Length: 277
Picture 1 (spheres, rainbow, N blue to C red):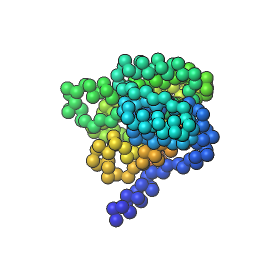
Picture 2: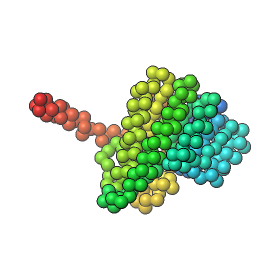
Picture 3: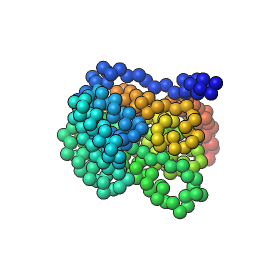
Protein backbone atom coordinates (compact mmCIF):
# COMPACT_ATOMS: atom_id res chain seq x y z
CA UNK A 1 0.00 0.00 0.00
CA UNK A 2 2.78 2.43 0.93
CA UNK A 3 4.50 1.76 -2.39
CA UNK A 4 1.27 2.46 -4.29
CA UNK A 5 0.75 5.72 -2.39
CA UNK A 6 4.34 6.74 -3.08
CA UNK A 7 4.02 6.10 -6.82
CA UNK A 8 0.66 7.88 -6.98
CA UNK A 9 2.00 10.94 -5.15
CA UNK A 10 5.06 11.08 -7.38
CA UNK A 11 2.94 10.80 -10.53
CA UNK A 12 0.76 13.70 -9.36
CA UNK A 13 3.49 15.99 -8.09
CA UNK A 14 6.44 15.25 -10.34
CA UNK A 15 6.72 15.08 -14.09
CA UNK A 16 10.02 15.18 -15.94
CA UNK A 17 10.31 15.62 -19.71
CA UNK A 18 11.74 12.88 -21.86
CA UNK A 19 14.36 13.93 -24.40
CA UNK A 20 15.50 11.52 -27.09
CA UNK A 21 19.17 10.74 -27.52
CA UNK A 22 19.01 11.91 -31.13
CA UNK A 23 17.72 15.32 -30.01
CA UNK A 24 20.48 15.64 -27.41
CA UNK A 25 23.12 14.65 -29.96
CA UNK A 26 21.80 17.19 -32.46
CA UNK A 27 21.82 20.06 -29.97
CA UNK A 28 24.81 19.27 -27.76
CA UNK A 29 27.08 17.26 -30.04
CA UNK A 30 30.41 19.11 -30.28
CA UNK A 31 29.20 21.97 -28.05
CA UNK A 32 31.35 23.02 -25.11
CA UNK A 33 29.45 22.55 -21.88
CA UNK A 34 30.68 23.50 -18.41
CA UNK A 35 29.13 21.80 -15.37
CA UNK A 36 29.88 22.73 -11.78
CA UNK A 37 29.06 20.22 -9.07
CA UNK A 38 29.64 17.49 -11.63
CA UNK A 39 30.83 14.63 -9.43
CA UNK A 40 27.61 13.63 -7.68
CA UNK A 41 23.84 13.69 -7.95
CA UNK A 42 22.26 15.88 -10.61
CA UNK A 43 25.59 17.12 -11.95
CA UNK A 44 26.91 13.61 -12.49
CA UNK A 45 23.69 12.47 -14.15
CA UNK A 46 23.82 15.53 -16.39
CA UNK A 47 27.44 14.85 -17.33
CA UNK A 48 26.67 11.23 -18.24
CA UNK A 49 23.78 12.28 -20.50
CA UNK A 50 25.95 14.87 -22.24
CA UNK A 51 28.74 12.34 -22.71
CA UNK A 52 26.23 10.17 -24.56
CA UNK A 53 25.29 13.23 -26.63
CA UNK A 54 28.91 13.82 -27.66
CA UNK A 55 29.41 17.19 -25.95
CA UNK A 56 32.82 18.70 -25.19
CA UNK A 57 32.86 18.89 -21.41
CA UNK A 58 34.58 20.94 -18.73
CA UNK A 59 33.68 19.36 -15.39
CA UNK A 60 34.16 21.04 -12.01
CA UNK A 61 33.88 19.42 -8.57
CA UNK A 62 35.80 18.63 -5.39
CA UNK A 63 35.88 14.83 -5.68
CA UNK A 64 38.78 13.85 -7.92
CA UNK A 65 37.92 10.14 -8.14
CA UNK A 66 34.42 10.84 -9.47
CA UNK A 67 35.71 13.43 -11.92
CA UNK A 68 38.30 10.93 -13.16
CA UNK A 69 35.53 8.36 -13.69
CA UNK A 70 33.61 10.84 -15.83
CA UNK A 71 36.80 11.82 -17.65
CA UNK A 72 37.51 8.19 -18.58
CA UNK A 73 33.88 7.63 -19.58
CA UNK A 74 33.95 10.67 -21.85
CA UNK A 75 37.21 9.59 -23.47
CA UNK A 76 35.80 6.14 -24.14
CA UNK A 77 32.87 7.81 -25.88
CA UNK A 78 35.16 9.96 -28.03
CA UNK A 79 34.38 13.24 -26.23
CA UNK A 80 36.81 16.02 -25.50
CA UNK A 81 36.84 16.55 -21.74
CA UNK A 82 38.69 18.53 -19.10
CA UNK A 83 38.28 18.26 -15.36
CA UNK A 84 39.03 20.72 -12.58
CA UNK A 85 39.26 19.59 -8.97
CA UNK A 86 38.17 22.81 -7.29
CA UNK A 87 36.58 23.76 -4.00
CA UNK A 88 34.41 26.66 -5.16
CA UNK A 89 34.11 27.92 -1.56
CA UNK A 90 37.84 28.68 -1.58
CA UNK A 91 38.44 32.07 -3.19
CA UNK A 92 42.00 31.26 -4.28
CA UNK A 93 40.90 28.05 -5.98
CA UNK A 94 37.93 29.82 -7.56
CA UNK A 95 40.17 32.58 -8.92
CA UNK A 96 42.56 30.00 -10.41
CA UNK A 97 39.64 28.25 -12.09
CA UNK A 98 38.35 31.52 -13.53
CA UNK A 99 41.80 32.18 -15.01
CA UNK A 100 41.66 28.80 -16.75
CA UNK A 101 38.12 29.37 -18.04
CA UNK A 102 39.13 32.72 -19.54
CA UNK A 103 41.48 30.87 -21.87
CA UNK A 104 38.80 28.62 -23.35
CA UNK A 105 38.17 29.47 -27.01
CA UNK A 106 34.42 28.91 -26.80
CA UNK A 107 31.64 28.14 -24.31
CA UNK A 108 28.07 27.25 -25.28
CA UNK A 109 26.38 26.20 -22.03
CA UNK A 110 27.17 26.67 -18.34
CA UNK A 111 25.17 24.46 -15.98
CA UNK A 112 25.73 25.92 -12.51
CA UNK A 113 24.80 22.98 -10.36
CA UNK A 114 27.20 23.18 -7.40
CA UNK A 115 25.34 23.77 -4.17
CA UNK A 116 25.40 23.32 -0.43
CA UNK A 117 22.43 22.65 1.83
CA UNK A 118 22.37 23.19 5.57
CA UNK A 119 19.52 22.74 8.05
CA UNK A 120 20.13 24.61 11.29
CA UNK A 121 17.85 26.98 13.16
CA UNK A 122 19.03 30.54 13.70
CA UNK A 123 19.26 30.22 17.49
CA UNK A 124 21.46 27.16 17.04
CA UNK A 125 23.79 29.13 14.76
CA UNK A 126 24.50 32.18 16.92
CA UNK A 127 28.21 31.32 17.02
CA UNK A 128 28.32 29.71 13.56
CA UNK A 129 28.66 32.60 11.12
CA UNK A 130 30.85 30.29 9.05
CA UNK A 131 27.69 28.33 8.13
CA UNK A 132 26.41 31.42 6.34
CA UNK A 133 29.80 32.28 4.84
CA UNK A 134 30.29 28.83 3.32
CA UNK A 135 26.74 28.61 2.00
CA UNK A 136 26.88 32.07 0.43
CA UNK A 137 30.36 31.36 -0.99
CA UNK A 138 29.20 28.25 -2.82
CA UNK A 139 25.56 28.89 -3.66
CA UNK A 140 25.88 32.55 -4.62
CA UNK A 141 29.42 33.87 -4.99
CA UNK A 142 30.73 31.00 -7.10
CA UNK A 143 27.75 31.34 -9.46
CA UNK A 144 28.49 35.04 -9.92
CA UNK A 145 32.26 34.63 -10.28
CA UNK A 146 32.01 31.85 -12.85
CA UNK A 147 29.23 33.60 -14.76
CA UNK A 148 31.12 36.90 -14.94
CA UNK A 149 34.09 35.00 -16.34
CA UNK A 150 32.02 33.14 -18.93
CA UNK A 151 29.62 35.85 -20.12
CA UNK A 152 32.03 37.19 -22.80
CA UNK A 153 32.38 33.65 -24.20
CA UNK A 154 28.64 33.03 -24.03
CA UNK A 155 27.95 36.33 -25.78
CA UNK A 156 30.11 35.20 -28.70
CA UNK A 157 28.33 31.85 -29.00
CA UNK A 158 24.80 32.95 -28.06
CA UNK A 159 25.02 30.59 -25.11
CA UNK A 160 23.16 30.01 -21.87
CA UNK A 161 23.63 29.85 -18.12
CA UNK A 162 21.32 27.33 -16.44
CA UNK A 163 21.17 27.64 -12.66
CA UNK A 164 19.90 24.83 -10.43
CA UNK A 165 17.84 26.54 -7.75
CA UNK A 166 15.20 25.19 -5.38
CA UNK A 167 11.41 25.23 -5.49
CA UNK A 168 11.55 25.95 -1.77
CA UNK A 169 12.43 29.54 -2.71
CA UNK A 170 8.93 29.95 -4.15
CA UNK A 171 7.03 29.55 -0.90
CA UNK A 172 7.43 30.77 2.68
CA UNK A 173 10.74 29.68 4.16
CA UNK A 174 10.68 26.70 6.50
CA UNK A 175 12.42 26.93 9.88
CA UNK A 176 16.02 25.78 9.83
CA UNK A 177 16.86 26.81 6.29
CA UNK A 178 17.82 30.47 6.70
CA UNK A 179 21.37 30.12 5.32
CA UNK A 180 20.29 27.94 2.40
CA UNK A 181 17.25 30.02 1.42
CA UNK A 182 19.12 33.32 1.70
CA UNK A 183 21.89 32.10 -0.60
CA UNK A 184 19.53 30.56 -3.15
CA UNK A 185 17.23 33.59 -3.23
CA UNK A 186 20.22 35.89 -3.76
CA UNK A 187 21.33 33.71 -6.66
CA UNK A 188 17.82 33.71 -8.14
CA UNK A 189 17.62 37.51 -8.14
CA UNK A 190 21.06 37.74 -9.71
CA UNK A 191 20.04 35.33 -12.46
CA UNK A 192 16.79 37.19 -13.14
CA UNK A 193 18.66 40.48 -13.38
CA UNK A 194 21.36 38.99 -15.59
CA UNK A 195 18.77 37.53 -17.95
CA UNK A 196 17.00 40.88 -18.31
CA UNK A 197 20.31 42.62 -19.05
CA UNK A 198 21.85 40.03 -21.35
CA UNK A 199 19.06 38.40 -23.36
CA UNK A 200 19.04 41.16 -25.98
CA UNK A 201 22.76 40.42 -26.43
CA UNK A 202 22.09 36.76 -27.12
CA UNK A 203 22.79 35.29 -23.67
CA UNK A 204 20.01 33.66 -21.66
CA UNK A 205 20.17 32.99 -17.92
CA UNK A 206 17.62 30.37 -16.91
CA UNK A 207 16.59 29.10 -13.49
CA UNK A 208 15.39 25.60 -12.62
CA UNK A 209 13.37 25.80 -9.41
CA UNK A 210 14.01 22.16 -8.64
CA UNK A 211 11.71 20.29 -6.26
CA UNK A 212 13.00 17.54 -4.02
CA UNK A 213 15.55 15.28 -5.72
CA UNK A 214 16.92 12.09 -4.21
CA UNK A 215 20.66 12.74 -3.98
CA UNK A 216 23.31 12.10 -1.35
CA UNK A 217 22.81 15.66 -0.10
CA UNK A 218 19.02 15.50 0.29
CA UNK A 219 18.95 11.94 1.57
CA UNK A 220 21.15 12.97 4.49
CA UNK A 221 17.88 14.25 5.99
CA UNK A 222 15.93 11.15 7.03
CA UNK A 223 12.49 12.67 6.40
CA UNK A 224 13.37 13.47 2.78
CA UNK A 225 14.37 9.88 2.03
CA UNK A 226 10.73 8.84 2.52
CA UNK A 227 9.15 11.56 0.37
CA UNK A 228 8.31 11.34 -3.35
CA UNK A 229 11.03 13.02 -5.37
CA UNK A 230 12.79 13.14 -8.71
CA UNK A 231 15.77 10.92 -9.34
CA UNK A 232 19.00 12.65 -10.31
CA UNK A 233 18.47 11.45 -13.89
CA UNK A 234 14.98 12.96 -14.03
CA UNK A 235 16.31 16.24 -12.66
CA UNK A 236 19.03 16.23 -15.33
CA UNK A 237 16.33 15.84 -17.99
CA UNK A 238 14.61 18.94 -16.60
CA UNK A 239 17.83 20.97 -16.89
CA UNK A 240 18.42 19.76 -20.44
CA UNK A 241 14.83 20.46 -21.46
CA UNK A 242 15.03 23.98 -20.02
CA UNK A 243 18.35 24.65 -21.73
CA UNK A 244 16.96 23.90 -25.20
CA UNK A 245 13.84 26.02 -24.65
CA UNK A 246 13.25 29.76 -24.61
CA UNK A 247 11.66 29.62 -21.16
CA UNK A 248 12.91 31.89 -18.42
CA UNK A 249 12.59 29.18 -15.79
CA UNK A 250 11.28 25.78 -14.83
CA UNK A 251 9.03 25.34 -11.83
CA UNK A 252 6.80 22.40 -10.83
CA UNK A 253 3.12 23.07 -11.49
CA UNK A 254 2.20 23.06 -7.81
CA UNK A 255 4.78 25.72 -6.98
CA UNK A 256 2.67 28.24 -8.90
CA UNK A 257 -0.11 27.75 -6.34
CA UNK A 258 1.98 29.74 -3.87
CA UNK A 259 1.52 32.81 -6.08
CA UNK A 260 -2.28 32.79 -5.66
CA UNK A 261 -2.37 34.52 -2.25
CA UNK A 262 -0.12 37.31 -3.54
CA UNK A 263 -2.27 37.75 -6.65
CA UNK A 264 -5.46 37.89 -4.57
CA UNK A 265 -4.00 40.26 -1.99
CA UNK A 266 -2.29 42.68 -4.37
CA UNK A 267 -5.42 44.85 -4.99
CA UNK A 268 -5.91 45.16 -1.23
CA UNK A 269 -2.25 46.05 -0.72
CA UNK A 270 -2.42 48.72 -3.42
CA UNK A 271 -5.56 50.14 -1.78
CA UNK A 272 -3.84 50.32 1.61
CA UNK A 273 -0.85 52.14 0.15
CA UNK A 274 -3.11 54.60 -1.67
CA UNK A 275 -4.90 55.39 1.60
CA UNK A 276 -1.55 56.10 3.28
CA UNK A 277 -0.76 58.69 0.66
